Image (cartoon, rainbow, N blue to C red; front, side, top):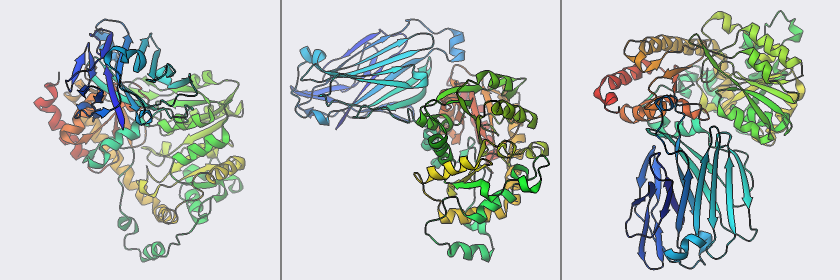
Amino acid sequence: MIRKLVLGSLHQTPIMGRLQRSSSSSLAIQGFISTPSSSSSGDVGLSSSCFNNGQLEQEPATSRRGNSFQACATMNHHQRVATESERRNNTWWESSCEVVVDTDDHQHHSSLNSRNAVGNNQVVLERNISSRQEFYQVHYYDMNNTNSTSYNNINNHSNNYTHHHHSRKSTNRILNVSCIKTNHHGLIHHTQQFIHRNYGTTVINQPFFLERYFARYEFHTKYLLSSSDCESMSIRELIGENNEFREGLLNCHLGYTDTKGDLELRELIINKHPNWYGDVAGKPPSNRLAASNVVITTGGVEPILVFAMTCLTKDSHIIIQSPRYQALSEITNIAKTKHSFWHAKLVNQKWTFDVQDLEKLIQPKTTAIILNPIHNPTGHMHTLEEYLKIIEIAKSQNILIFSDEVYRGLEYTEQDASIPSLSALYHNAISMNVMSKSYGLAGLRLGWVVSQNQQILENIVKGKDFTTICNPAPSEYLAKIALKQSEQILHNNRQIVTNNLKIAEEFFKSEENSKLFEWIPPKAGPICFIGFKDGREGAFRFCERVVKDCGVMLLPSTVYNRLDDAHVRIGLGRKNFAEGLQVLSKYMTSSCHHCHH
């Protein structure tokens, strides 16, 4: 059985609290949210508390004979009220921490009375805050010995966990340490760190915040005004009345496929995207990219994973655009790389990445630059001249460029649409794309990488041997059907995106809505990243309230590695976008919005 204890703090409460035996099923002592209960001498039960959609819920208390549990907590931070500036900028953080302890390994423990329980069996949570650093320490003490296990988190923002195990004999373990961060007005976001019995370091240090947020709402919310993919379709819609396509699908052989991917599919990828891989900068036909420059992958995460496994080392320094799709930074931790972030700037109401800032980040051991044209979540896209400057920077040290190009095909202008893939411009670039975003076919779980560098492609194939081995045959066949209709599919999806962009701009720039939102137009792609002006409520709580109250899903900026709480991502790729905005508009103009302030 897993016992769960929730400790929380508010800025106005005392900094010390202790949970004691009590007949009460729910008790708050000195500002700590606690749920102890006791049924009789020798029995101590801890009620299970959980967060459901951001709300703290109390479940019925349970008891278990033979296990006593006591806890004390110390939280050291400034005893003061946040200033107006701190509230507005969300720089004043409070926290609640949940410690889950597996007591199944402690069947032999004898019960303790409250007098000596604190000395022999306790969970201690300490938090010290400086201007930019947080320190968490969690101890679990064995009832029958003084050996202890502690886990330290230095600088929670980078999730750099170190573990100290003080006794090899100890079998105690803390399964889950999670931090629910709040500002002055409530819950902002919930992060978790899983610590396993072997006390080893983990490759993935934190949850995929964006994916976990989508998982809560995506499949039961009518209006997804946050998605980065385009309108999808059924197999029936994709095949249409084409009997050749239908028969081909029915006759698709369900055996293993070529690790590199179906040859016809690779040829279609090159031939159906001539602006990206074909007619580049006057290259003669013999130098243009071909099917031999393509490897088919299972979705977009696999190439990131395999790139990290085969092209990076612990000595590598990589540069990543920020904000970012979390997989681009988290997965590269597999190689224990060192990261620097190339931050977006807001200049004249437009998102931009200054190439001079990139140049300043280059180090002697810089191995790779990870780019995301068109950028998620800002919708930024570099000019061809800027890409050429980036390539010159990379060439100076033979730096690899990993280019996440999943939104290509959704440019707003012919000039941007004509910009080649980075893989066509630079020998040491590897470009990634998928069927999920611009084509709206995420269910195929199919993508590809393109590079002039055959050694990189060989590395990708070697990596696939240890991941998916090959791609699903039905997905490859359906992708070929889609690519044979690529002009029509991409045209339709661009129409949806550009029409929704006009609707969104009119909505968010209106006199009433501009009081709450700051319209920041994207340069290309199916998403935009707009400002949220209400620093009291914050983007996270606003998005939570909207999705629950009226069934419209927006995406708060907190999911981008806790970037801030002052932006919202809008997805432009769905047919019911305008209808969803109407529902949102009615909700915002009702008294429901104002009653929360």
